[in-house]
Image 1: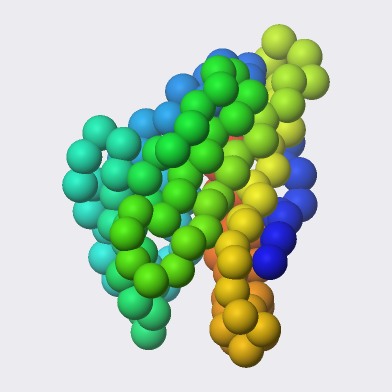
Image 2 (image 1 turned 90 degrees about the vertical axis):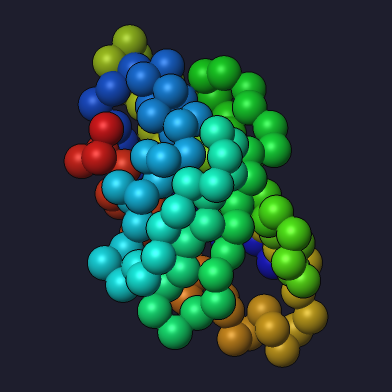
Length: 131
């Protein structure tokens, strides 16, 4: 399953956006209002839970400054990644797009497609005001 957020324009340089997204504690500022738990576990790992959903642990898996950050599931039964693509428009403007990739059976994919789509759109929408 591959889901993409709309591209979001951020009035910051790609380096500033990359630095913000590289610090896992900043993801708390991007979370939707229905977050019930957020905890930084390590310099590259955090746990979060949305109301009515299980806890999810994300770990920084790959960084390519200043254009790409890959967060992946850290343990658990499902394997997925959340990739932040940062594209410089000029020295003070960037586009950011989040891409969710996961390998799910068709039934699971059908159940989580809506909530995951809404989740990554919320993260993406919150980036410009959080930085």
